[in-house]
Image (cartoon, rainbow, N blue to C red):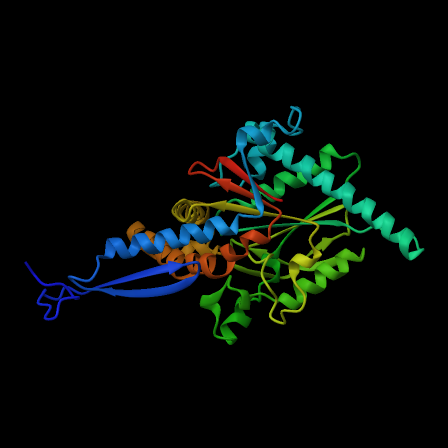
Length: 359
């Protein structure tokens, strides 16, 4: 029997293996050797530590099952048709009218409670300051990974809030419009970092939120996923509506000056969550579906991939996921998850099974 490392003269043959893990955004490399400890034990210890940290992250959240959540709001008929729901969902997303009834109508009701509370506070503050309180938009931030379903959630909330509240106006903004144009990213040498914090004009985003919060209408740039760039000369006019939904992977992140936080402007915030393996699957599925839409559109960013063998396309998409989207998720997006007021957790089929509400 070979002598282990703690023996005076260990004689176990070397069998060195390298183990690399990502632990809450930190990349770690471990070397294991025969007679010391196994990669399996090492990995188990790391996994247990991560599970412990994850548990601590949710200490100030109330975990609510879907069954309990749906019972918190009286049953009503969804204020949209199956066709309307189909038209607003992202093409790789899955959502049903039952999901609207069980999850999103209670969520819209909760948002209305927060809105009334905010209005009451503004009125009381006005009395304290001995001046009339000025109406402000109720701003909702929606964050989560690429391909997790943020856009569907945001568009659905826009419809529900506008139709369940009499005369309510709801604007929807995506932070993609605040990405620097591709040419700027190329000049700065960070085109391969598109989607990372440094690829956004955070100063412009903060300025937009400040002006909206103060009741001003603002024109903002428009981003096209088809051309993979900011659309020149095209603007979206955003009014200071009753509700303004701001959706994007970066809405909970710190600006570079670290003095003013985007979340400071939010009155309510939502993080759409799912297992990493599921999100990867949804991303790859979406990438391939974008190709099918681009087959007859030479102007589309995805058209070039329609001329490549499918195996090469799948390999490229996987490489983009691993080197860009996964890294961005682990290092910059997921660590901001606990800044949300509500976390919606999805299962493999996009169905929400758990809701986390901040205590």
